[in-house]
Length: 229
Image (cartoon, rainbow, N blue to C red; front, side, top):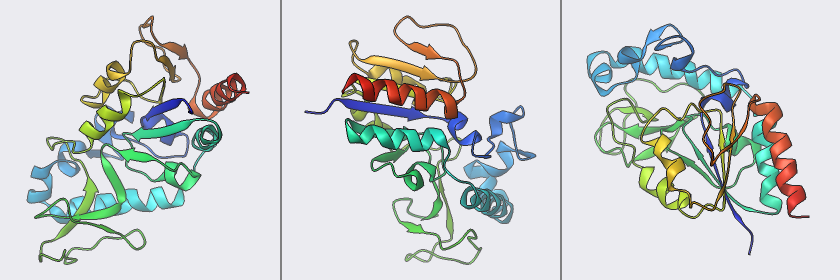
């Protein structure tokens, strides 16, 4: 039976494909306060602004390409059972070829019903317009988990992490909960790696690789593949 690898990815892996996050500039996301574009209250207050903001982000995602880190993770599937759990709302893992991806915070290439979030739809192109409705007649909004909303996939992600024999954390500060708590759900005997360009207080149970994702991940992937040769 192939070993189970669980990969937890954050903003750092997508940043190398040119995608910025609100954490890049003290709570601003492309010049916007997150409270103006990434909360349920913002949507109620100014849905046109929120829709425009995510249309611009979606356009940027569609113009971006998977980088060497995304591509390297796909290679692990040749010898391991791999699940990717991402905090990112882009689809770069899927476009690189990863076959099992769980999106904790939704995915920007889909829309959801304002009335019933479980109703989701693929978006054609980059623009979601006001007046586009779900089958219940409610306005469609981005399929993104906003601040103050529940994280519906967290329980599934937790179950996956409990099965990890190898855990790889990439490009995340491990400061955003509940996602950060997933690391501690991996079994105590699991091998744990952190690939991130920013150093932080060391944990004895995690091997730190202080490199950017596009260089550190391919090296780690090759090392793991060689260990199964």
